Image: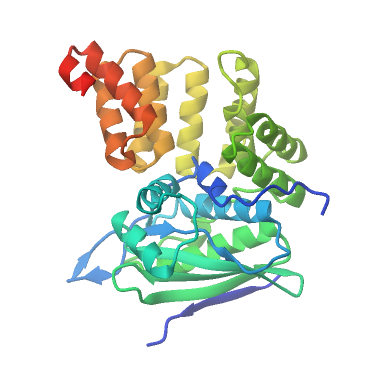
Length: 361
């Protein structure tokens, strides 16, 4: 395994599913999506670095599409908890792309990525490509200033296994972003967590599960997540996603068991993913107040995360906290426009609060 250091700027029978880059957005939930802090001085003031990640282009025709989906999902999950920059929620990036181009996962030109990045509030965008060289997977990446389009830094990370490529890419890109930060940077070892699995087959099952779920094939996704957990019982992210495939109205025991497995291995998750898991598990245990508090902390850390906002709004609404649920739904609508989940919560709250005219609008 070899990793090529970042370059500062100058002047199988395993599961294979249709290529859906958008599946990377699904995680994270965990993804999704998650917070880092600080950036170079502008006008002698520190401003928070905010990074929007775009799916890497694929130049290697022999690459397994599902593995690439898994790579992108785990890359964003791995970057999410760095203390040196803030990550734009993948869900929010996708929403902006959908509004601008009618497709949340269509291929974009460089200037279009910069435009989406600027609209999301990102100071930088991360782009790249996946290729194959002599039985090695390579991720060639660039960190671009979204304000003027200049390449701040770039690098190539390579490894024989997708699991190693993901881990090394998180390390290299975190280091590169850290070099752009102002002041004392965090210890690199604190920002690279083993989110994935050391088992390459478990990694592939997890990636295939993401792709299947994005296509609406929930039962198939469940089988893939279950397969990943059976191969690696410490794979907390897969266990959490497995729990989310169960209907708590009819499959509560299965949902709780999978969530408990994830919780027991939460050291494999970052801070933000752990908060989402905690809220999910507390809700399954009907500990409503604690669940709401966990979702509130998640929204505070990830104000543009659809998963966190929907979780909080739905929980508040279901347990008749009408004023707070309306406020949360309105926050969600500021990011996600006419999203039906937020509209439903907002309308219900307005009716219950006696604001009939606003509800009918």
